[in-house]
Picture 1: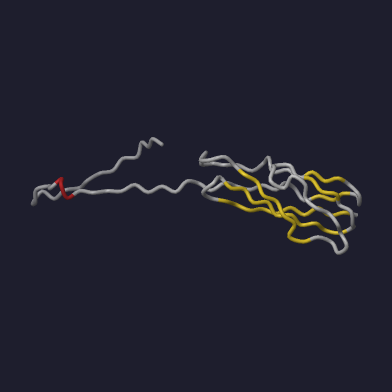
Picture 2: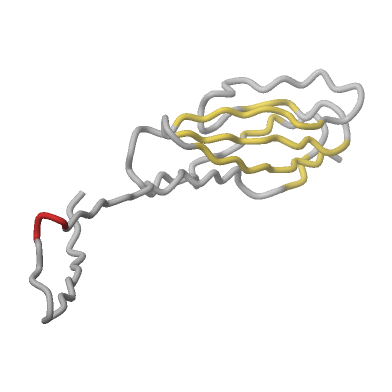
Length: 122
C-alpha cells in the first residue's frame, strides 16, 4: 500500500542534527470486514427462507470473505436446519411460528465481524 503521508523534523539551531539517531516506524491495522446479515423480516410458517450476506464488505481488500451462519435461538419444537451455512445465501424452512435469530460471521482470514438477523414466522 502506498501512502503520501509526510512528517517534519524540527532541529535545534544550538545543537547539530545527528541523522543516525532518527528512527520511525509505521503501523497500520487493516480494516476488519463488516458483516451484514440483511433486514429482519416476517414470513409465513412453512416458507423457505433465503438469508443474504451480500451486503457484507471487506474494506481492507485483504483475503476473501468467508461466511458462517448459525441459529442463536429458534422457536420450541422446530426441526429447521440451515442449509449451505458457509455461503452468502443459506436457506432454512421456518417450520414453526416464532422468531428465528441467526448470526452471521464473516472473515477475511485475519479478522472477522458478526451480525444477526431475526426472521419471524407467523
